[in-house]
Image (tube, rainbow, N blue to C red; front, side):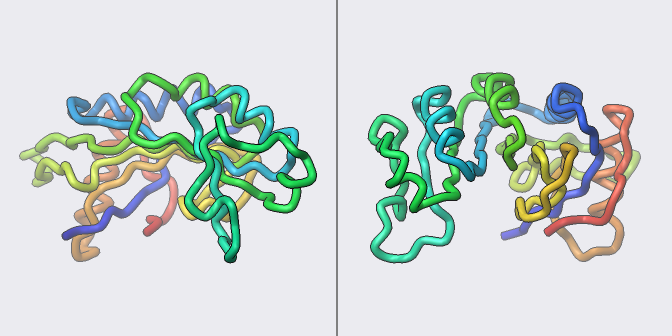
Length: 198
């Protein structure tokens, strides 16, 4: 089994532009089986309540789970308490919706993220064959991610801009990965702008 490696191809303070370019990159691949997942880190009670209202199908989790914790397995938005004192004890929370049909949630989600760290991940794509570049089609690791207010896919480096990453199959680090990422970026008029992220 292989693992993906991601290359940044765009950083911009404009979330609308970032979403537009990410969608163009997604369109380079075969989207027949494509899915999209979204997630956002919420650090205040008003933000938790706002997202619960705006995304009624979201699940709320806490990453650093310590027993006992009511968020260990996730809490659906419909079952999430509105008690401010209770919520404050468990901040920050991560709200997410996974494996949605492509085109069903991206625009609304991008408008909701605001200053929070968030991510849109398009997965189950298929990158095409490019025989003249010695690039083979790729399905298992063909992904695109848009990071809001963050630059790393670990979502641990807050920034004032948004980053689009293209994911390809990690091979033996002989340049094949970057060549593949560069070709994909070129299809949208962009280029690789930083080191890979694993």
